[in-house]
Image (cartoon, rainbow over all chains, first blue to last red; front, side, top):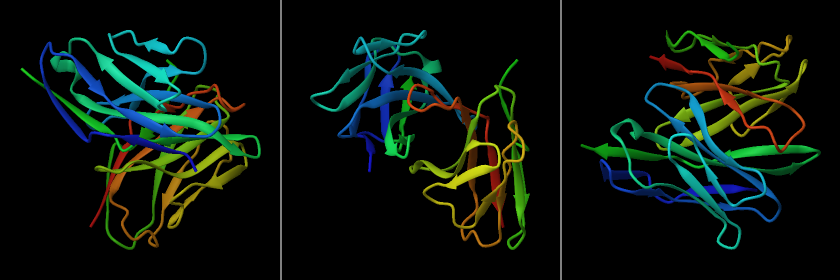
Length: 116
Length: 114
């Protein structure tokens, strides 16, 4: 069974500092990777995804993530955070689960707190 | 605008009562999903449906039931058999055909059972 590990449950960081949210996945077959963001009492919004091609993917609000197959990682980074980035971030991996279907597995989330 | 609606946003029930959470989508997606979210636990899959009139159990289906009579709708019933029903419930949908489709989420329903 596939698993996704987010190594930090909480990450405090000062405004305008860089941040990295770590994500590792386990899969022996092709996998498709996603980062979602959740603001308090809201649903999840897709931040970025890796399906194939370039291993570096970017979002419209300055986040980027790099797919590293050898390390089975998909860490999320931002060079300078804003107060508005305070949220919970979920890494997810989609892999083949048999009978023609693909299952999406989520990590337990990382709460990013940006300190003014 | 296309999207997923969940109602109500907050729901309160007494223990022993069944309660049904609504999920509607106008994205023309074939697949729909229900997740439960608890603090520090991430998202856990309750049920999913890849096509009308068909649905499958997820990882934590016990105490829940669903129906999929229309493409747009996937209601979730939390039964009295669910031992710890208080949680945040999220509905999602996606295109079918497998790997390339991300899931889109509704705003969630927070259920409190006392």
